[in-house]
Image (cartoon, rainbow over all chains, first blue to last red; front, side, top):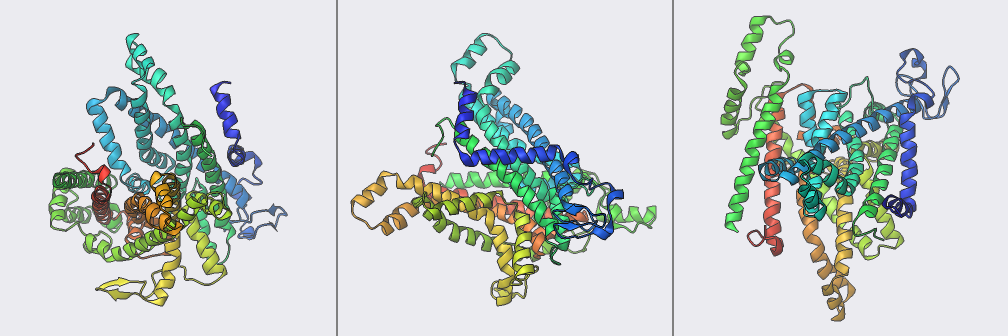
Length: 290
Length: 324
């Protein structure tokens, strides 16, 4: 059996992990196809009717459409707003994780390969950063940078790169002592070729697990920052901003405006975490536990 | 040991210095606070006068040296928005945050250790599985949303608990605290539960894996072979070995509880320094942002130092000098 098939088979041995994977697929499809499956374009102001504002879940609008998850204060269909919000949240999570992975892994592998002052400098910076909670660093960065999609991605990348750098370095330090690396050196391959063609693929398993966990972390952190009013602007509402908007109506009992976006966020995060958990077990060199 | 203490102290001071520079440069390099502070109708002369009065016309490095000089005497600048010393503003709010953070950490540890022990001793029982499922949920639930749902259920629907503020406070050694009055305690419940959730899950997981690890060790089998009761084996032999990592993590996590209090305080309108930070970011009140960060960074460095020292004292195997 090829390694990929063995991993797939072991992954599928856990029913909970499979359920998580199915849920994750559903979340990703919903995010990808949001504009086509939403009952309404929630940001087309011409389609909104203030008469429909704060309708409870399942109520009919003046035009006769059913709002399964209710409407918000603008008369916006919550199901549509959630699908669009999920799209934004997932996009931010994937973009920032990919960028952070690319930057962090490059720096971590370089630190392990070249050693010396570069290694010392990079790891001191990573240590310093990791000794502070991610939310604090992101808050400071956003206080400095201001609001916006690009700003929040920068903040998330700045928060995350250090995790990848540490993990990549640790894995590469083990790998570089192996014979295939010696062989590559003996063949006089360039540093870049050894790092990316030889070291990188062999450091991949722990990085994959970490990246999965970090996507969930990035989505949660973005939602938290948007909730605090420091993340995305009101024109690009992610799930966090929808929840924050619903907070204003929570005390008057209009629970659905913040409860349902929260459940969507929860489903996304839980499904990613379930997959990450099993992936960690399967890719663990000591073999799956339990 | 003494040399280690001094080396760690020197490291801590270096970290403080680097962080103050980064924070100062970051916060002061971007945006011009004068736009927010002066009346939009004021003319060029007035703007220039205000800029000079606040020292904002001088080069950045000069502003930093002035800032460091003042910081050494305990002066972290005056709040642009309130026109009072920034450090006073923060110290005034600090007890509220510390009370909330301490309460949350206590709940996490006092509830998490017994639950984790249970899940570790009986991993296949229904209770054990339920505890673990709950802790996975606790990790995945976004803190701020849980806060909202707590308000929805316990305040809006059931009407049991208040939604915001600290309630009446009583003085303990001159510091106002909520937990001494019944009404204050009622105000404390929801924010504490909200803030404790993540670390409760963390402590449960740590205790569980520590317990399972310990139960396989020879000393446990030996204790059983001696005929000790199960209570004594678990309560003394297992617990002691589980406690070291849990206490360490609880110590380190105390700092992040203070940082995450920003979120909980914003939801429950808890008048602590986290809410002050968010308010200050929104009006670009730089001295307060910088002062908050300096104080929190100092707090972090102190906590990390204390945990490191406590750890090497608790567990001789990690004592420095022997291995590094």
